[in-house]
Image 1 (cartoon, helix red, strand yellow):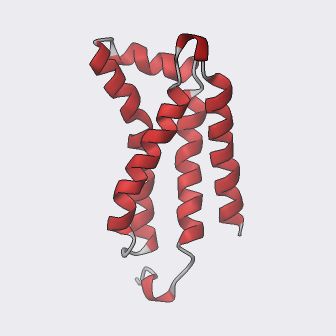
Image 2 (tube, rainbow, N blue to C red; image 1 turned 60 degrees about the vertical axis):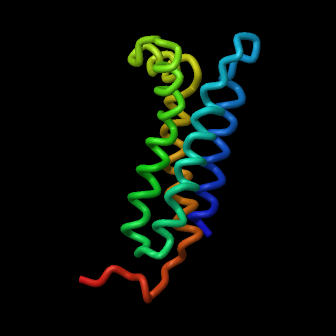
Length: 126
């Protein structure tokens, strides 16, 4: 139950930050792109790692969320021919990328833990 509450709070913070930090007048929606990228990345790896032990699959899902957050920003920079460092700094400082990039992996980790409650058959045995 605590993991589900953590997921709701963390992902809610990410969505709120994406909404408040977007600039529709300039058509800049970096927070939304980061959320979408993380959702796609996690959706791609989740079916593959679902049968793994919870401890092992958690790392893969969180890594997919981190990569998925930043992939749209990097792809946009490459596609437009802009400097990657400047694009990341812009998303980080101006668009709330710092909050979204931190909240999404935490929310995904909590959601994964809530979905994959402790199963004795999949426990890590030492």
